[in-house]
Image 1 (cartoon, rainbow, N blue to C red):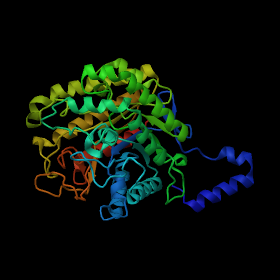
Image 2 (image 1 turned 135 degrees about the horizontal axis):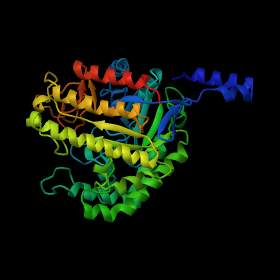
Image 3 (image 1 turned 90 degrees about the vertical axis):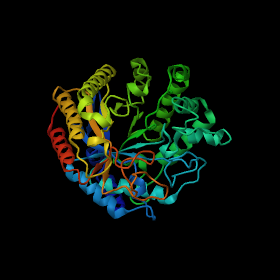
Image 4 (image 1 turned 30 degrees about the vertical axis):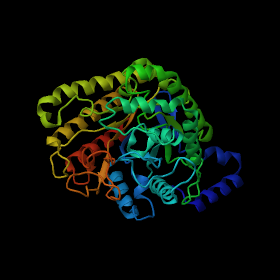
Length: 442
């Protein structure tokens, strides 16, 4: 990241030197060229991580810890991680398990410390030549998300996830109303204009002109709905929301990429046609997929030894399906969320990670094989980096007011999927993959 003085100085020098010098100024933005990402015309592939809490850790506030943030970024950089997927919105919410403090209230009131935390994160990432993917709301409840926007425009009415009175799929089916509520979408678009149009107060660089930001994502895991009946009925509104929001972001930040944040088939009623329709929109630059063997019932945490093999076969098939879809769309593919439990389903950092390590090796081997064959996979972001974070309570549950930020969000057991700084074997696997991707050529 250049300092403000360096940026101004460079601009003056280019202006004095004339058009020829300006033409030679390096373009540091990530671009899409067919099924590949490039920077300055050279292929860009990456090993990345999810670190949703980066803005919270970067805040100059009692809940932040900038020294820890710098140590975490240094640790990731030492592993070869060059890309972080980060939450860039949380809505002040009545929902259980929504993170506190929230970034904004949906009506233009923001927590300045959290905005400053996002500024600080991006500034520090820029110093380390890292790239950020920023998602702008959430289908799920843990950051407020779409259900919270609905509560703003529907007299405070909402449904909590995992409420026995509203069993699955009532929560995602209710969230699907968001796409057709113009008043709720308008509040969400207001936030997009505020964040994408923001100027970093530390660097003085507008977000839209910052090459540290690789891409903006519409949301974390947007789905048409939970059930087929509701989801198919919601498709026209859902697809209009995808296209309208992508066009808005493109108009505000034409030099940066746009993606959906989708799980892929699991986030599209498991219908390939929905995935293609969602991602063939011109303003959507690449396809994403998430892979959750435990959440999707492909493995049993209490019997990983007996279920791992069948789960691994489903993982391989899921990856192959998305490689084919991305190839047909002619766009890059990023496996941007993948997680696996520790041995025995433990949440404790001292628990072994033998099965988790095998899962990471499977994902990375598939990526490296695809890269070797000039395929569309351009990057990965494991879920998630916990680093120095440790659960504050013996039951591994997050309690409002906790400041021990981990990769597992507030609605999940703290330690469920996160990679700790003490996970030497997992970190070694990530480091080896990062080196393999960094040295590969198309």
